[in-house]
Length: 400
Image (cartoon, rainbow, N blue to C red):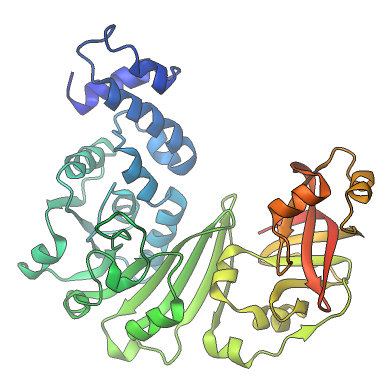
């Protein structure tokens, strides 16, 4: 049993089994590649959360764990596809195709997609899966995408590239010059072959340095999923008349299917004047992860008329409840001293979620000091106000 479809069918028949236990039954199923079956079972369970569309495809073959972990989620792939459509759609080349998630969801909005993949083992899996998904406007090309692009005369409406962010020793890297392929070396070629170049970068990248390296950038999209920063997208234009003096930065959090976004330009942040406070009001506000990465901390204070707790404390407070704040909103219930007995009276079940922002103790240290464990419905926000470490017990009202 070697074909993808046969392995998938066997996995569906044993969908309730534990993959690790199934691997121990090789004597019972001597003709079955149980390693690939276990890979399918793990992928199917992961897909129910990460790629719900794939989970409904009966003939989808899941690649190894590393490829799945490195792939876009369905939510972030759909966001890129909508961005592509907003720019006019058309033809697209995915130069670092991988598992093919971006290629597939882009193809739903494109007239045609060219999928490129260097890995000879991953390539046939993606090709099979595009056919299983009945997406017939994707052409698959195996090999070094830069070499193949140089040898062709193709021109696309958009090129998407997500350079591999591991060095030859397998260590994670983030700078463009350390990734493979080196985007900076091939930038002129890429821009000569498309109208728009969409670069997917590491969430750890230095945005200011990246902008110096990519002066053709027109927009930056910082994408978080459920308050975890997942992707930073640099949109470059090959048309010089589209190059702004200051690109727009859009900070987006995809939360329960509802996007919450805030956009700005760097000069707006530089010119913004925050207001500070020496006291906590009824409500506390924590920006979502994409805003934290974007760094528009002064502008948040000015735009939403919120008081910032301190220059290096990126939390805000107000006596008024804002219903559209891009992040988490908390109601302040009480202040807690750094004392385990007092904490026990306010938290009889000894459970709480701790957030530490510009506080000398980490959440783990606070859990130990206060003899608490993670859980429950309340939050303990540890921060610094007027140079003094403080703790506030809060209730989460909203998250966007």
